[in-house]
Amino acid sequence: MCQHKKVMHTMTSFRLVALLIFCSVLGAAHARLGDTEAELVKRFGEPTLRSTHSIFAQGKRREMGPVLYFKQEDWSISCDLVDGRCMRISYSKPGDWSEDQIQLVLSTNSQGAAWTETSKLSIAKLQRTWRRSDGSTAEWFKNRSMDLVWNAYNVAKKKLEEQAKVEGMKKPKI
Image (cartoon, rainbow, N blue to C red; front, side, top):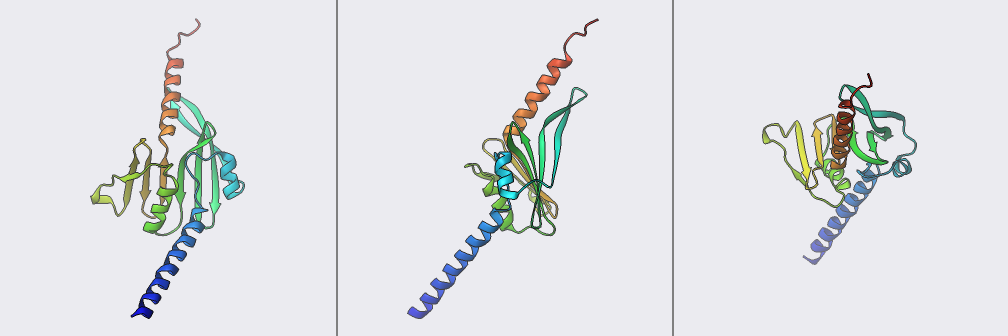
């Protein structure tokens, strides 16, 4: 009986070590909400592509900031930066996502807050959603991507839209 307990303890320890290794390797493939460009480049290397993220407000294109694209093994990651910080992230990879991968993306981007699942049961196999107490959101789409938006992005976007509205209300010089 003692030998059986020893074997079970060894197997449990092995599983724990394997899980920690899996999480550390997979964790290296994930950007984090709030990261700076320097932190992203340090983690992934130089971006494979750079572009600009824009919104339309008051009939004009308004730039929010740069978008950096990274490739890490099978993962593709795009990061929208605003005010020098990553405020939106999209993760994608070919094939199915495991529950461990979904939870790892959420925990990596928790910023100390807990995610609460808000998915509709009727479509949870195709799309799942989460919300944090600060208003940040996450959406997972089966066989496509997982998108996270820090609430600070929504605040910056609203500020830009309000600035555009004020500019649009100015009297023309006639």
